[in-house]
Length: 324
Image 1 (cartoon, rainbow, N blue to C red):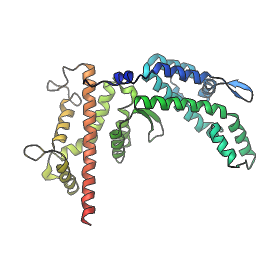
Image 2 (image 1 turned 180 degrees about the vertical axis):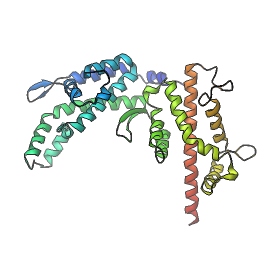
Image 3 (image 1 turned 30 degrees about the vertical axis):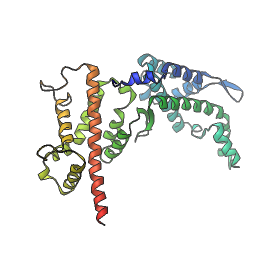
Image 4 (image 1 turned 90 degrees about the vertical axis):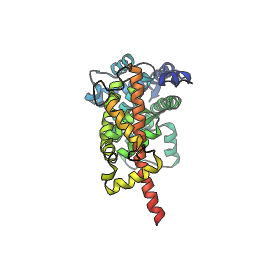
């Protein structure tokens, strides 16, 4: 059976991104009442976009509607859906952080829990906040509907919403290995750790240049390890322990001097169209689709090698514990 690409899989899942986007728009425009005043989420976001959304994020778009329209013109299908969701989530986060009252807004379910607990405002400030909270509960119920549609879409397309170290939230393809590797790398480089996750960001599908940039960054992270393990006799004591453990789980070359997976990854970096531009590169006859698939394979191999290094450390620790 031929391996299917991302867009073929989405289609076979019978997931209709356009239909989901129509539902999102309907939720945004669905009327609700705040103190007998008819409004909707679209108006809520539109008013606060002007006041709370940072200028650097607005770009050239003065209004919420302009920004939303620009997203629809630039992206299509799942990309459009998830870019719109990321924008709404980011805007909502800015509102919660900067509006005096918004950070206290709750849904009807949360409001009922508070009321059932018997809590009452202790001073005028708390009473003022409580009045605003009650007033905007229906609005939060609408926002919860949006979140439910996002959860549905993420589940259907094997994606997830993650929070980066800087607090930003992005939507990426689920990849347990990528999550584990990003945590490992975060010990030495938060920037590289974020790039591990960014590689799977939905907007990077078919973005060969960005994938290349990320792979080069990861190659830079791994280079000291790859070089060190090419010279087993000169390893530091710590690296020698890890190397010896890796030999038990990874295949060596015929001379039993090199770990094949590490050696092959070095070759991928050097002759896979990443670091050099010469006649010895393996990708010269590939079209864009083939090149992206090739980069994806290098990415997967990179995750494997980083996890192998971690496995070496874990085995070393295990053997220490066994001796006690």
